Structure formats: C-alpha cells, structure tokens
Image 1: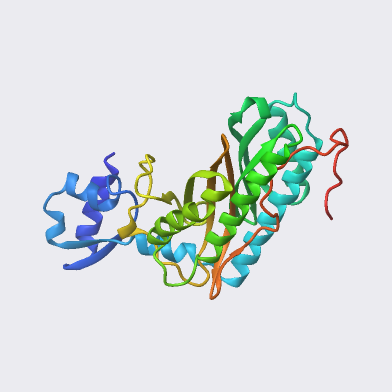
Image 2 (image 1 turned 180 degrees about the horizontal axis):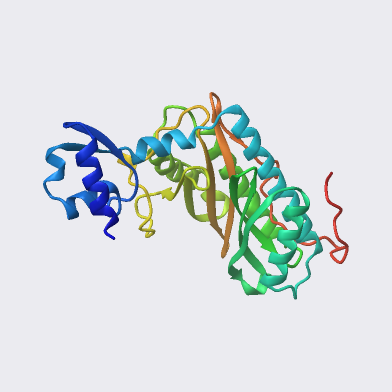
Length: 294
C-alpha cells in the first residue's frame, strides 16, 4: 500500500482548492517533499506551508504549570545524580551506574531516560563526562556533568570555577528578544576574552530545546556538528522559552562541561535545576548510600 499516494489522493479529493496545508518535519521527509516526489502537480492545487520552525518555537514556550513539571524533573535529576555519585566506587561499570540511576529516579517518582558516560576526559584524573536525562509527568530534561572518580585536585576545582562563572554569565544573557544563535556566538567571543586570564583556552557554547521541543544543537558557526541550527533559523527567545545551556571549557588540559535546563524570564535565563556547577565526585563515605529525599 502506497500511504503517501493515498494521502495525496485524499487531500486532492476532500480539500477545497486552492488550500493551504501546514507541514512539519525535516525537509527531506515531510509532507511537502513527499508530495513533490509522488505527485509533481499536486502543489498547483494545494499550497504547502512549512510550519516546522513556528511549531518548535511554540513547543519550547512553556506555561507556568509546564515549567513546574520541568523544575520537578530537574530536581529529580539532581537528587538522583547526587546519590549515584556519592555511592559509586572506581570499579563501577556503566551498567551498574545505569542500574543505580534507574533505581534512584524511579524511587523519586520520575521516569529515567538515560545516564551515559560519554567519554573519559583524562584517564589519569579519572575524569568523565556524563549525559543524563529524566522525566516527570512526561516532561523531560537533560543535563551534562563532569564527574571525577577521585577527589579532584585544587587545580581542577579552580578550573571549574571559571567554567561556572562563564556558564552563569551566559545564562543571564538568555534574554527575551535575542536571537539564540547570535547570542551564543557573541557570548562565546566575549567570555573567551574575559576568562583567558583564568586559563580557559577554548570555549564552546551550545543550547537547544532538547527534550523540550527541539533536539538540534545550536552553537557557534564553525562547529563541526552538522546538526547545528543556522543563525537565520535560530529561535528568538521569548519569556517562557525553555531549553538547555551547555558550556564546555578547555582549561589546563581538561575539557570541563556543564549543562542545565533553564527558562527565559524578563530578566534573563533562570535555572530550572537547583544544583550549582561543580565537579561531582564521591564523598569519603562513598560506600554508604545516600537516603532518598521524601
């Protein structure tokens, strides 16, 4: 059965001509492109309008109730991660970490999506970058954390303080009316110049509404990631726009990373999570499980 051809026939037989129909999806796999392939003459009777970007923008703007759901999801993520990190030991495998992650998130009424050890940044320091996702009532948030299986050195902690300052400055600049792509490009140049004296040699800023309406990363134009959104199609920030902000700072050989969900307010970006940027590592009592919050 040719579903596309049947859909075209249905449209042509039921929709008065001329008609405007909105389409959503990637350019190579939405209704408009399929119509062009199946029935080249269909667009003479039906005007197809790509509403992908407007719909993404609408989905990214959350009501107060939705923001409360996202805030709770972020809280669950922070609390669960704290328990996982405080309880693990250096020999824990990713499978064991995932099992503990699922237990902690579910124990708080959340829905675990994943915990992924993306890469070992510096084996000598037992430093890793973790990608995490959790949901509450169907509302998903994502985060990136820098984790060390050993107690971080004072040099590593000082380096991360620079990243924390840069992240908070970038967050404040997520103001209504700004083009997100232009804002990130400008901020990267400003923050890199400002924090070079702190030892930052390279700085990467990415943002999207991942899990909140748009999975594509948005960052500086020279990023090799082919999924980056061009600035001319980047969203314009509005009050209530929710997304995730990632900062990666190269400091003294470390590639430190932190991301958290945020919401745009009239005064700039506001964190939805409650955890302050820092290097996560097991406590001296790492063999003890941390009690779940009630």
